[in-house]
View (cartoon, rainbow, N blue to C red):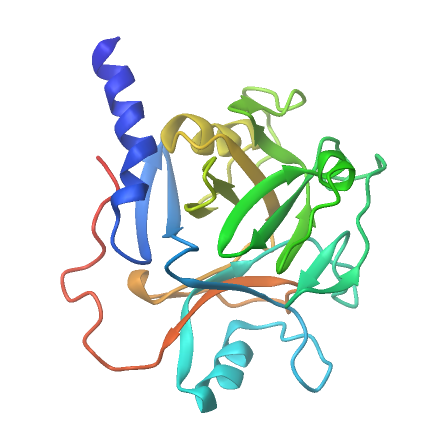
Length: 260
C-alpha cells in the first residue's frame, strides 16, 4: 500500500518539476493515452476560434499559417470544447478577454448538459477547471475560457454519473488542472475508452483534483514532440501553446517522462 501511495504521489508532483512543454505517451488500465503537460506561468497557452477574417480556424494548420508571419508556431494543440454544426462554441467561450458566447448553467441533453459541467479558465497565466454554477456565482473573469461537460473530476472526486465498466467507448479528450493553476495536462485517449476510465486517468494516474471533458469521437491532437498531427472534420474551439518558430532540433532525445 505504501509503495502504491508513493507512486500516485510521484505522478501528482512530477508535472510541477517538468521543464517546458512536454508531450508523452502513458498506459492506464490497459489503454494507451497521449498527454501534453503545460505550465501556464511559463508557456503561452491560448484558445483559438475565429481567424482574423471571421471564419473559424477549424484545422490546426490554419492556426499555424496565422502564426507563421509573427515568427511563431504551435507547440501543441487540441480541440477544446463542443460546438454546433456551424462550429459555434456550445456554452461559454472567451478569447483575449472578449466573450463570444454565454455561460450555460441549466441541465440539458448530451454530455454537455450532464451536470455538473465546467469551465476551463485561463487568467493571469493560471489555468483552472471550475464547475459552471460556481463559476457564475463567483463572477469569474478569464482571459480565455471554454465551457464543456461533463466535469470528469471535481475536488478529487469522479463525476457521480460515471459508471465503471461502461460500454460506451470513444476516443476522448479533456484537460486536468492542479490546485495552484500552474499545471494543465491535456489528454487524449489513443483508443476508445469509457467515461469512467478516462476520468480515472486524471484522478488516479495523474493525481489531478479537477478535470473537464472536451469531446469524444472528434477528438484530435497536434503534438510535434510525438510526431502527431491528427486530421479530420473542421473543429470549433482549439487550445494550444504558442512558441517561437525556430529550427533547433527540438527534443532530439524525445520527450522526458513525467513518471513511470
